[in-house]
Length: 398
Figure 1 (spheres, rainbow, N blue to C red):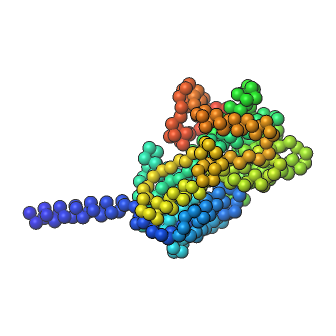
Figure 2 (cartoon, rainbow, N blue to C red):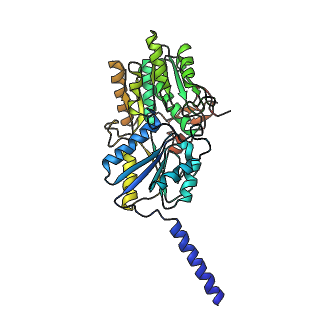
């Protein structure tokens, strides 16, 4: 009888510990130090700077918040140092919330979150807290945040197709994964829609080529040189290059070619003000606005309402560039008046329900992806296994 009672007591205690271990960290209260780990420089005019600016928004909107950060968290700039170790150093500076702002940091972010159940963790991108996703592993102190920039990539592709004189659009891609396949494919869908429905051309006459460099930005000796990739596009008749990398080589090279008298354009990525790098040649930029989502997360950490979850935030269709409401936007650059009006019209169509992720659609190898009239689920888009039919370029890493 005594053994039974002891066993019951042990099981009860074990269950209680399990429940405690699975609870969110305690509320931070009126003061919250936020740590940010960035894969590139904080001022890269791309992905990292967009995240950095998102935290500046938090500091302005949420009293009691403070920021500590580490940038250049990659194997080239910080050899021998892991991302989880960088997170540890931010905790040592008082961080109670740590944001790992790259999908490239997924494994290390999970390792850190498991080791620090008392720290709020955000993985910008990732799907680990998505119950309906393929990689669900619930961690009570973690959330995933991503913006539905697929819509804005469609706008980028649309603007490119409305501008090109040669019918040849290049896509400067980073590394190959689910995210980059769906973003490149979104740009193609926007371009194809403009080409067929606005310019009334045959879809077969549109050339859309993707060239991958191997990472989010140039690492000499490791990646392909994005400057050379952009030059190769422009030298072979591609007069618009859409960038999918974190840095601005595409617009820099377009500006160089334009100065030589060639009619070329480019579209950067990630950061609202990236078009300033290529005035006169940048058609616009699809960008992330991390501020509102980061504000919500900070407030939840402070007031005790934090719940682990996945969020994939879309545009605020009434104004895609609303800094307080839209998670993604498109900042117009050098567009003709007619193309600018068509871009607005296209955005309006999407706001009213135009869905380019609707069949019939085929994958690059000819496999049916969506039947006629079938709309893709979030999972089908998120986990896109190949580029789409009509696109040239690798779908998987060799």
